[in-house]
Length: 529
Image 1: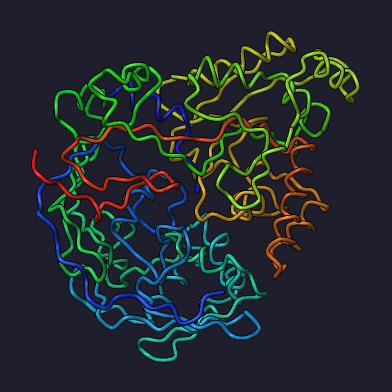
Image 2 (image 1 turned 60 degrees about the vertical axis):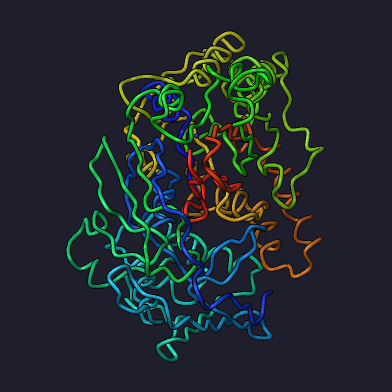
């Protein structure tokens, strides 16, 4: 999923980061001791699961809605609303058996037909989803719905109230993982038909329901007593929206958890200080990069892309700007993703080589380059320190001036493909731990989230072969080949892999970020201050 760009994080911190027969428990776990969990937050752009394509909205949606399957603690697909499933011998047909005790927040029972409706709605062009093709596109018939040729997905069949059959185009080991993404979550038809912004009062199936939402002020989640899984331990979760400096609010006991910015890292990592015992450092399956637009000059020339990549000293960026809170990225796949290559060298920092590449390009010299603009996200013209540092290095090392065009976050995150200039500033967080979610989703020709519109037939061939290869080792080898080719071709400028630094009050138990960067709030407990 698209990660909230670093500029948004800076503003927030300144104004304030093949299975068969799977079975799950039938009865929900009892609720805990109650209490209120107080957090800092940024307003979601949308709470519509069919449309959500970025992390800010996703953090709330996963608390309010649910799907057939979820990712377990090992990031493997596990039963959720589906209690079990079977996969046909040819690997193309999935038959899901739904639990019979699942209901929406208003008490209406969830049936197989609700999933068929939800997926067909997500793929309907009128819904305006920018993610439906990515996460549901393997299902037979989805392409026809996305193209407006029909309203029914032929590969989805309701066999009875609690049995759903789903057929995909070719066997793919990651298909179940795709169904853990919000686009595949179930929504209530009656709720949706209330109006276009029905999601401001959502009727979901998740462990929490929306109690109150006062934009730019407060968002409250209340425990869903009808939840089919592990009932939330806390009575409610209160998000204070952009209500101050998070670290100061944490120090004054206004919130129970905070992310830690560079400004405070010395204080929280001091082993003799008051915060060290409350610090959690969690690796995140994320990748931040500068995207090039190869559809327009000068990045239609691979030598220019390589030159701009080689002109950035990423070690200096990581140490001086990020204070070593992140890891330098030479490739695209972050550590922890199958296929990650520790030895992938990338295009190393080399100013002389960068200048030679410009000289050998069809533009000949920096004087022959057209005006350059990089697209980023944020409010009020405040540009992030990392982006400022990168632009300064291009100026110092190449003699190139780069302008910045800032877009309002919602427009940036949902219309980047149309809005991008010659370059753009982007982050991506894993939706599921598979190389396909980075390499194929971001760089395959015609992919929905291929924001740069990069195209390489050889890379496409490798990705297509890797997707259907049943031997895992062979599949990962193909993905590694594709990644190496993308890096050599400077499809983008890899910058950093993420880590989350957070402080958690001692009386808050089991607040843990997933490798995707969000917590499962129904597991959190308040045990008394």
